[in-house]
Length: 68
Image (cartoon, rainbow, N blue to C red; front, top):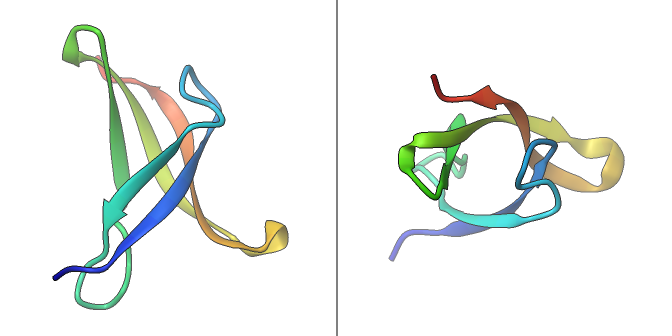
């Protein structure tokens, strides 16, 4: 069974939500998260992984913009 992590979303329409992602064999989450909108991938918001050691969390996904 693969390991997972809960990572908060920062900024954009999904600010404050948390997503559960699968970690790779090195214990790291995917570099990006596409938060789907009502139109699916066409309305997705793109979030990029960043470290967040200052807040005591290993990672956050920070909003980068809509998928165009």
